[in-house]
Image 1 (cartoon, rainbow, N blue to C red):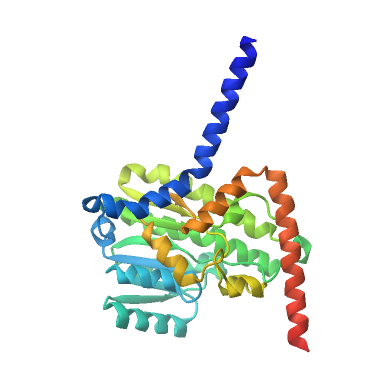
Image 2: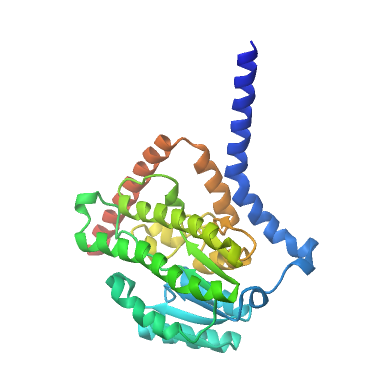
Length: 318
């Protein structure tokens, strides 16, 4: 009888801890939005907290340029890093006109691997970088089995999703540590929560990003550096071009501007977050399900997206 009571208590504690862990990011996100209303003196501007310069990778399409715009609206000068020079110039001109801040562009193709980082380091050497947003990412063209994925695409996924976040974090953290302040935002994905059939490599890269982020947060905590793990679910961007439904967006699939506005509001306040409150609710319910179920649901979902992609290709051909 005593043993049963002990086991029941242990089970109850385990359930409570699991629920707290699952809900924690959502609770942090809610409190971060409420804090300015109840404790206005506790909310510092991003420039005072971290410095006057921010850099955003992947800053010409999707969330990247919108995140950069939000930072500029808060008074930060921004370094825009991406591979398309013309798009970079256009985004930079728009930001300078709208927010009257300084911008700098760095042309870099992260898919090329190690060779790009010396150039980036040289371009950033005189900038006291206060915030780095590791946003650049690469996705499948459409859901596919591993052997259907071209080798070049597999390397692109690894170089961009794994290589960029590793080397850019390394590059920025050294200066931040010397200055004793700074913020690192690593953009992950809800696909980190389980292996994802038909997008196996993509999901695996996001598990890496989460692991790296949590580890370096602990490594640099004593140096006054804030490290955020940002894990959105679906956003209506070109990254999800394989699904016309996702590109159209909706309440659960915000556009890049809406997402960036919410995500930047959590910067400096929440360490682990989806960045968008409705994504936080979805994230909680995904975590509650057992992993085997999530894998099965992921397979079904991606089979549906794969079918949608080929139907869209056929309709455009006629």
